[in-house]
Amino acid sequence: MPTVIKPALKPANPNFSSGPCSKRPGYSLDQLDVSTLGRSHRAAVGKSALKRACEDTAELLGLPEGYRVGVVPASDTGAVEMALWSLLGARGVDVLAWESFGSGWVTDITKQLKLDNVRSLIADYGKLPDLSSVNFNNDVVFTWNGTTSGVKVPNGDWIPDDREGLTICDATSAVFAMDMPWEKLDVITFSWQKVLGGEGAHGMLILSPRAVERLENYTPAWPLPKIFRMTKGGKLIEGIFRGETINTPSMLCVADYLDALDWIRHIGGVGVAIEKSQTNFRVIQEFVNQHSWIQFLAPDPELQSNTSVCLSIDADADQVKAMIKLLDSEGVAYDIGAYRDAPSGLRIWCGATVEADDLQSLMPWLSWAYQTVTSE
Image 1 (cartoon, rainbow, N blue to C red):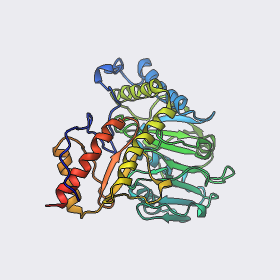
Image 2 (cartoon, rainbow, N blue to C red):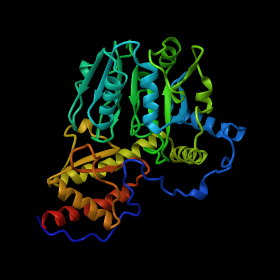
Image 3 (cartoon, rainbow, N blue to C red):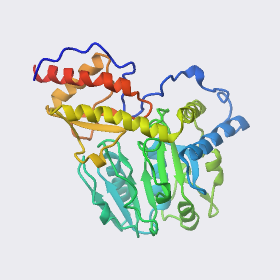
């Protein structure tokens, strides 16, 4: 390998973490509307902000009529858990997993809920299970984008319109960055800290009318904690989906989320955000195509995520760790190591809050770091 000179140009923003993700370009705390701070979230000013979080989310995403949006506790994980514990058990379940978080849902369904009629469709990191084998007479639980494997489902064509069961989709690193076929999804969850670069601890739960019907006509056999309860007297608690949260949210985090939504509107909407993410991904794709020592963890281009881009390196695990530490010490890339349960490698966030120019500046540093650690 020829000698690589240490690059001179560094990314203006070295934050490439896959969660919490980089703040939007031009972000400043001074730009947040903090009029809600120090006030009750039950006061008119608090309710108004929370209601706007729900309504603006639905508007910007272009959700179908009748879909409800709620702010719920405990980030994307809390939103998924609410759905699993509240909805499952009415019929059989197919649960798909090809990375860490999907595997977690398998564990919850089989070992915590202990449901009997469950099919677990599992694939290794970098691959998908056989989508054609999914039984949609069952409820189906899956991630849209495997954040820790860099593998996304290619589209929604594998989901039938006439399905009997519900589709429960963990979409935390996909919403606002990938085209989502909303009519094919009955439960969608995400967190502010991913594609929009928001703060943690709060989740978003989107329900289709079919999911609401299930909630109102099915009572699980197990007790539900307060933060999971979405019905009262057999009816949906509609207030949850109008900003009347189950527990107390951080109004500072809400203000931060509203700022992110305003930014999406300012740049031209979710379509522009998706294109920004795809443009970012193409920067890395071009680099990988030009260098034989680095590859996508997902070999199939159709399945490669355009947000959490996972890369394999022709180096042992210690050398990869050395690369990551070197890039961090140079201030050019923070938090780009693979997820702790994933194969050794890099994970570089390419959502819309990351700028393509910063990724362009980062690429030569990857070559420099690789040569540095492999020549020692």
